[in-house]
Image 1: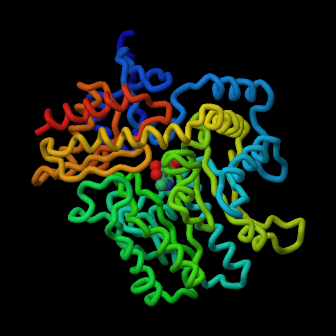
Image 2: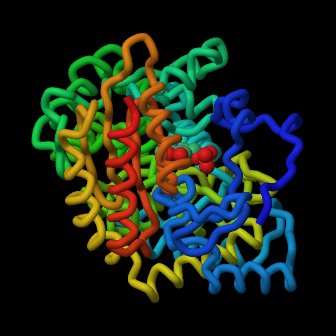
Image 3: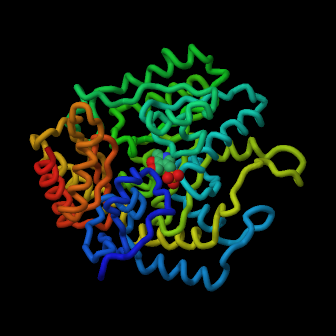
Length: 441
Ligand SMILES: Cc1ncc(COP(=O)(O)O)c(C=O)c1O
């Protein structure tokens, strides 16, 4: 295949250094299972399940067939005032996988929308309970909750916030993040040190705002986009206890962790901590058609079901909420996860990733390695005066010279491969990382 002739001028590439990208574009032309093919015909091993989302592998036949069949039956139905079978069936299947009484599912089209929806639901819930003054949200430093104004307000990745500073939700506060280089430099799974960091919620933030004004606390169970920060043992439990003690809603953002990344349907089951609401997206339907959503406890839904019966209870929704194609892809993906036992396979392969990623200790510039589930991250020391450059170059070297797609966030290079990965794939990812770590000064 010859390199595609593309006019690169019109497209503004998201979350990408456009000028650098357009000087040497990385174009993926097709995909199957664990591999992409680039526009010039190179095979690239997908070390990142796309963007943490193609967790059953690319272009799986069952999902392709389901979407095609749906397209032949119903292309679109309005999502307001009328509906179609898809979202009811998909919601039921998601609720079956969710823990406890988290049984009500609201569909969005992305993780960002899911986060903003969850925040709005928290406000709506308190208002319905006669506590509309509860409007403070508590997030964390370094958190990534997508790019909506709600998400960046509770988020804590500075680069995602600083340009838009004036437009954020006014009533937010942030706990510190849990990473500590001294205690967490080389961690397998949950670090022993750091559960006490949750106490900041009770010791600093609640006294400052007063619990009666706080709507919700939102956290990613595992911080993904900021570079694989694993919660210390007991930290999430402690957060749950504090939220319970003070009557605060706890929201888990499971956009990355949902649907098997940690070997369980959701991270809440892995950590045995049940939130009041949680978001999902990405792996819900193997990223075949955009979809996200929020799952809430029965009581939250029930509390909102107020007012005259002909009046909308929650003034919120999207034209494409529960889109027929997204729902068809969801049902087929959930079937695939079950039939191929992919969550257990993810749990099994997690051990192999752990072994592999920690074998990179001692390579040039490596200062930290951590892993959990099918997530492994390697952090390198920043090059003086050029933060983020070394990490970016390692990512580029792995792409161009080693044929492996990784993710980079600052100085942290991450692999988060599909659950169908075999040992040989993980070996190839680790070897590629080792070579790139050695190659990049
Ligand atoms: C935890 C978390 N929340 C929200 C999002 C945003 O999702 P989307 O890009 O689908 O809007 C992401 C994306 O990576 C995420 O990791």
